[in-house]
Image: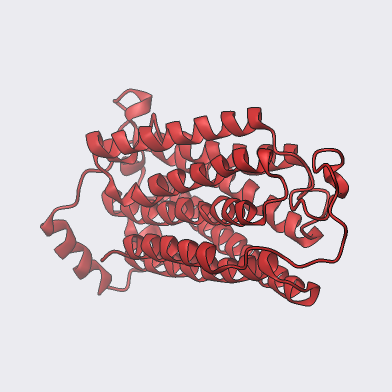
Length: 325
């Protein structure tokens, strides 16, 4: 079982377990407002502190589910099953967004909020996992493993393990913070969650730097490889895929920075309680991060690896490559 395949199933298992086992409501002695739509910003029973817009929810859900279906068709037509975690993550992200329709009708529903929050916040971990695997595949395809700071196999295992670890930290912190019946426990959960987000941001930032250094080294030391698709149309050049990956990484980084700052302010901070920030700095960057692969699907550039490729790859992993000068 590949690390990405195992990581995906761990994510789904933990999300479902947390959603089903988390407490349904927080006890409070505060009076419940007669009309939950009158003043949602000051309603202690409304976790969002606003009424979710059905129009924005519909647009976001429609766009994300379109990408999920389109990526499924890309896998069917061109392959690249190693991107499956991104595709399934798009489906779970769309599901999380769809629960906001329910929050529009029942803004004080703690159960709906729990489902929405966990699926929306944790699904992007699957997008990140796909990026980790893609870099390893690209390096192997170009036969330029030696220009990675670590081998493609090790970089995949290392960062997938990091992704799983930060996912579990976020899942634990998120479950505690949004289901706790007392403020100290909620604060503890929030801090755990923030630590998971910060570690994920650091890990992905490190990965992005490794990727950019890899491209620089290939251009500098393997010019023939760098321009090998120069005779083809620009959208068939492997560098188009590399550029796509850069755009995708930027989208994920924007979202990660936003979520880290948001949680540092607390669940009732300005960022967390403003719907426009949620769509502008979370949903939109993530949408760009996944939709950008549709015209540049990795399966169009990277062919399936054969048994001979795997044998050669294992033999390469036993050799310590000299650092490029």
